[in-house]
Amino acid sequence: MAPICQKADTIAPSHACSRCGLHDETFLHCVRDCAHSRSIWQRSGFIHNDFFSTSVTHEWLKNNSVGHLSFTFAATIWRTCSNKNMMCLRNENWTPNYISYNIQGIVDTLKISFPSSRNSDMKDRFFKWNHHNHSKVILNIDGSCLVSPIRAGYGGVLINDAGFYLSGFSGYIHNSSDILYAELYAIYQGLLLAKDKCIVDLICYFDSLLCINIITGPFFKFHVYAVLVQDIKELMEQVQATISHALREGNHCADFLAKLGATSNIDLIRYDSPPSKLLPLFRNDATGTFYMRH
Image 1: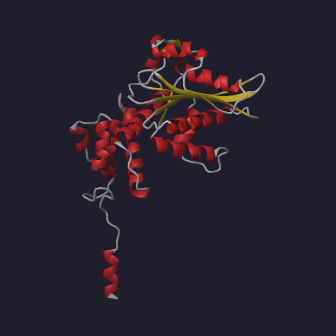
Image 2: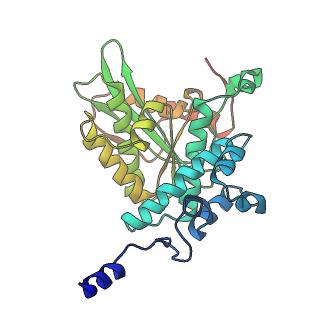
């Protein structure tokens, strides 16, 4: 029986970190101290030695869950955990830029979902199209359902960070009045357009928090649009896209194209140059025109 016991000892699972193999895989090592996680924190702005010196998990979480970086702290914890799982379970490793954009997208969504009292100031009632300092291609997308007659459509526009038009699209959805489907299909078609034009590392902005939660949250295989959501997730990985929320007042061009699609009878149109009636809206966005939030 001795040889059997010795063999069992040799195949016992190791407590070492599954990524670096240098330290025990404690919670703090996994989400903060491993070199893979530490680099993510540093890119998120957490660079002080005090941030990494605390060894008590409860104190570390409590001290950093408040203040102006609380949303960034929460988003980076989630991303470091999910990045570890992707590396170990799926053998995937996102680029540092892609991880940073993903974290910023989560932070933007949290700020919209949980506004502070300061957002009641008059200056915050005015909004404009914004690329939020991302030096990447921007995809603005939207869905539309007209009331009379009931028609559904979708549309979107690809713009670079300087505000220059790259491409656009619109389309009509037959026999549908479901705004959720229209918005999800707009995302799908926008990502397809980006893929066909060999564009990667882009930021997708649209004004539906429900769609953002469906796409970025846990996958429900029994959801009515599960197949479409899965296709969107796969396209996002292929073009390294990050989804973020945009207020309707900063999404006028996509809204125009979505309504244009709903009033047409064509499944899909792609525009190498902007339609003439889109030009005034596009010019307003490019010059930073403000709109009052309704």
